[in-house]
Length: 383
Image (cartoon, rainbow, N blue to C red; front, side, top):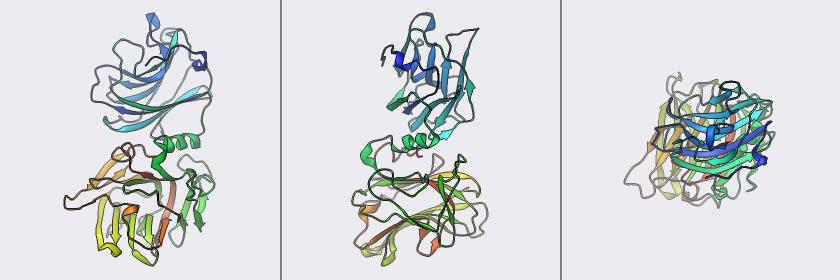
């Protein structure tokens, strides 16, 4: 797609460019994703800025800028820290602030940066092409956003969390100074003991610290829009692995065994290996339907992204954008149990608590979504 030239895109100062992409298997050249570059003559593929997929280092993504080869090759790029797998949705942000250009991938700031004064000449707004011969994108592109300023890190996270079909997001908690649900669906949290703390970017009062004794957040409310399949995700920082650590619970208050829950729990030796546990225990509908533990290397003192998604095939667990387990059994009539599958009762929905056990550490950017393609099997956004 060529949107033509427009002075509004010729931004020399701060700006933010955001897009969701799903790379395909074809990669025989560099591939342009979205940007404002020259598309003809000697400056084709130059004079502007672009998010691009790299051929020489397959599936590395770059926030690229070019000053039309002024002074013998005046260009630069901020590259992703790791390759971006194909056939999965990812969120990319080219972020320019104070003369320095940065790249975010799935809400995470990448280590590579550069400084450049962009130059524009015959530049055009391009989607799916870099302007150079043969450099066409293979895959899906969605939800392009453009700002003539540098978004704050909190705003980037909000775009990352919310930039999908608006109907899929049930509740979202950035925990920026409070436990309010930013979707407007009314699932504001009531905080019991948990204290505001610095998040993974070092911003104060931007996540919650739980003491492992009696701290939790109650987000009880009307979950009638909970759907039959969905996704839960959060960033967590474990203080230690000495105890079972419940992350999220949706339970029947009179009968706490009637619940869907996600827990982080240590193994018997309580050493480095920990378990990501998902259970759906509906005693009013026949007892424990399933409970599964997958042992992964969740170390204390490190921010980790975890997610669980349920669909018509089963339950899928993700750690740091990688699917670590799926629980699929052919004899289940509806293997992806979720809110709407629980029977009767008065439900309590809690963050950081399950019955009489409590989370110890920090939790940030918690989301609940209805199941849709991008935010289910392709959970690799997440935050």
